[in-house]
Length: 217
Ligand code: E4P
View 1 (cartoon, helix red, strand yellow):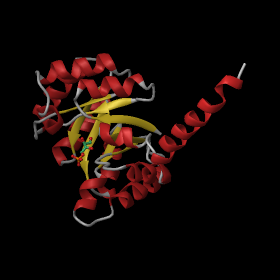
View 2: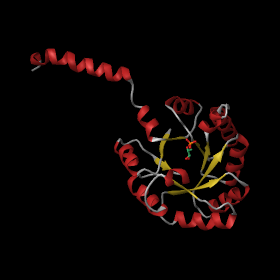
View 3: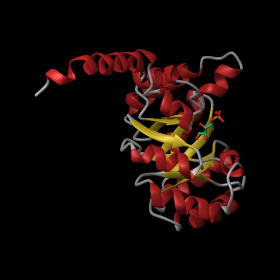
View 4: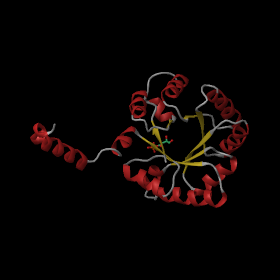
């Protein structure tokens, strides 16, 4: 399973990258709006920190505008993946971009049928938003497991990128149902590592070691 960081914050990306287990980054207009600087400059800086796919989203909602933005973003760096919204014009753009060799991440996916259409169009990644479905009393993870079955039935190569993950259990469940990628806020990335029993256990081991350290040659 690949881990992407869902942020445009360079410090968070640098910190996760230093752990050696960061595979990529996803951004969206909301995440970009929280940081300083121009959009393209931010995307370029992220690409210089992480050696993996970096998703940057278009804001046009019609084909020509999406294509122009997508080509522009893809020209910034070889690792840029263009994020396209799951709408009809978006699917047309995904199909055209895929024939140009530009990688795409279809975003704002909330159903297996949308994921099927994205795969048919040749999307590199599909991003089902788990947490936002949970927020309205749905079961977001069921969408991921249905997509896994559908993609495996037909051998679609589109990677399932579990998005809108809000806590460690979401990540574990996404791994259990076979998501290819989990994109995580930095907070969740850190929560995956920490456990109070590890901290207490280590503290006790070190304290006990203090009492015997003179006997160690
Ligand atoms: C995915 O690419 C999105 O940027 C993100 O996961 C959305 O998460 P949210 O629902 O917590 O905003």
